[in-house]
Image (cartoon, rainbow, N blue to C red; front, top):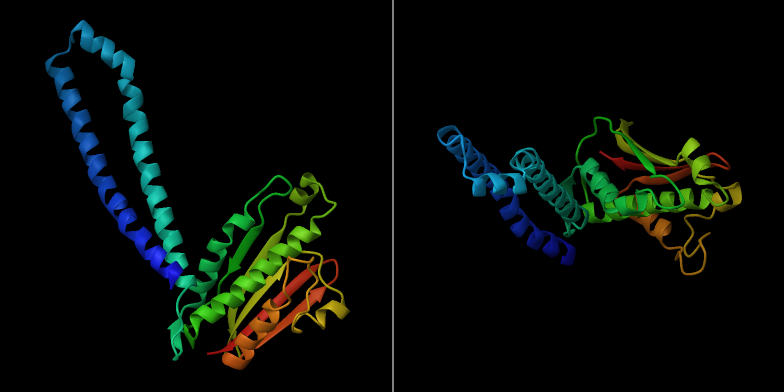
Length: 260
């Protein structure tokens, strides 16, 4: 509720800014048109005006102002997109299931995690590839499924960062980190496969990952609750299935299956 409320409060001033950008652009065009008219009627400006025109570099203003306006509009649209994603991700669940577009939930989660996907001093950006199929909206608890997406994607980022240990920036760039998300419908079930090309898991670890309090992360980094809760949400609450495939040295795939 807090996140949704903040997103709503952000929308009001941003809507005002975006709504006025076009009006500002039109006003600027009018002012430049007026200046052109003055130049036609008075082709020989006074020394004072000529000096001022040289100082402000009128041609530069003509070229640059539209770019500034466009950047302002793009920035406003970006904030609106983030705000929408926050509302989608934090969607409060009622006692009844709701019709939900799973792709919107996945996209909102990716956007919220974007700060972790960006390039940093030690590695290039992690690429996220979405291969979305034609899947129907399903009746579910959206907020809970968004938690599942967040947990699996955050774990994939952790796994990729861990796989980068001992590798140089150039080595990672040559074989870049990647997360692939594929959706489809199979046997009356929506299937969501989330795959990373990290170092994978051995069979012993794979058999324990859904166990309560089991974690391979350092102290203070993981609670061992995330995947256990994710499986409970998918299987107990939604009647679906959460499974994992992993090959040591190749990567890991989590498969979420939900009844249509």
